[in-house]
Length: 293
Image (cartoon, rainbow, N blue to C red; front, side):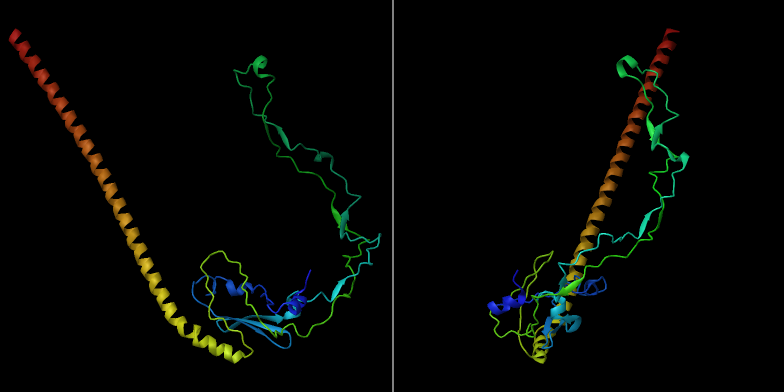
């Protein structure tokens, strides 16, 4: 595998990969978590092989180029000749050989349901021999295991001895780039739409700060204001839409209630008409009887 240091010597378009930023940068209280605003990112490489990462001119990460990245082979490697002794016991706890399983421990995990009864229509010729269903055994204690005790022969965790890596050689110029031919951005993101512009490469930190102030520094407040106005407009539209939906739903419920009331009135009218018809029929029959008499 080609190391970053070797790659730099072969290609002027050498890439620097930033380490993961600390979780505090992206926590729920941070404005950088997902505010959809423009931010200023700065990477500073120092001659003493240290680096510093800033976001919006505030330091969020720093460290050593050699220690935080795999630019160079490791200084130390595991000694391939070292092996753990055969009698090395790294078990802190062992089974107690004097511990015995209690006589009443043997309990089945499941037992036949004592309350189950064979159905009256059970036909052994057709259905076979009836067996009660199984239920969990309340007296089941699980698999028995002897208790653990301290291992008198415990020697601790064996640590593989290390040795100097013969492939390692220090490089005091990891930070230095004599010829930058390409600038590459290798990103992982879950939402598209990210845009990068106003990229500056310089050996003057003050010049970089002035450049940031002349670009991002001028537009950040107007952008924030514009974003706030857009959010308020969007929220207003959503509130109006929700209000319309609530109004439509309320009107729908009123229409349903009116229809139900109308149906009830029609049923009442039909019942009244039937009652009137029945009374008229009785009156006619009474008249006929009177005539006959």
